[in-house]
Length: 290
Image 1 (spheres, rainbow, N blue to C red):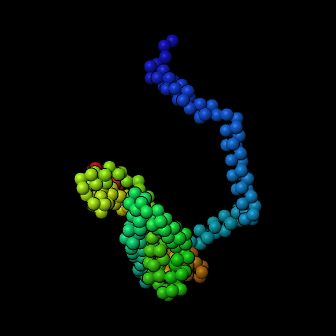
Image 2: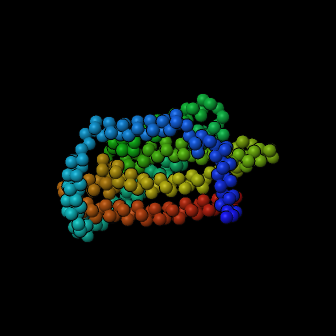
Image 3: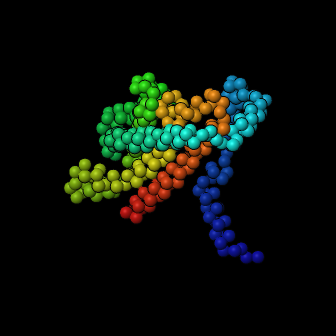
């Protein structure tokens, strides 16, 4: 019986791959033992962590039962009065404004540091090292800690929330921007340099057109993500709807809690839909430009 040509070609291709990479298709006993040891070690570490952290299946099941009770108390969602609804809506708009100002201000401040931290732009080892470590230091502090710091410095309110998000996102944007710049194609830069262009011209006309769509996509994603973060930092007094959410949880007004959560979810979904369209438009526009 004659074998189908496509099947024969596939078998021949597999045989060729097996001949070139025997360690993948026919691993040694040592390689298999190493995989088993790594998996076993991770499993043992996980079990040890669960024991140390006092994980208990019984407590987990009891907690699920209490969670069911909370959900029962949260139905139906209600803000109580129209006056409270408009108050919550204003606070939600404040949260979105905090996220918007925090993210886009951080992006503008981080862009120059992204170039400083990129090896293909700043070859000086000392400058590159200091820029990277500075960004690591800023990024190493969580946004909730930044919120607590700025609430203590400038007082309660949305201004502290904006400053907290600027600090939290500045380090992350600096790292992401520098990596996007380092991953850019060097042909455009070399072409500009070969025609007598200065280094600044190479950055302006060779690097920026490549990395701006990527940077824009990252900023839009962080805007969506920081809408949720702005809610969390609001709980510690940095303004927005998080303050109302924490207050209603404390007074056990679970129906209002569920209404606030639904308002936040709807806002995040809308921002996600808009930012997704904008990201595809940016990436698509960059692809057409090339």
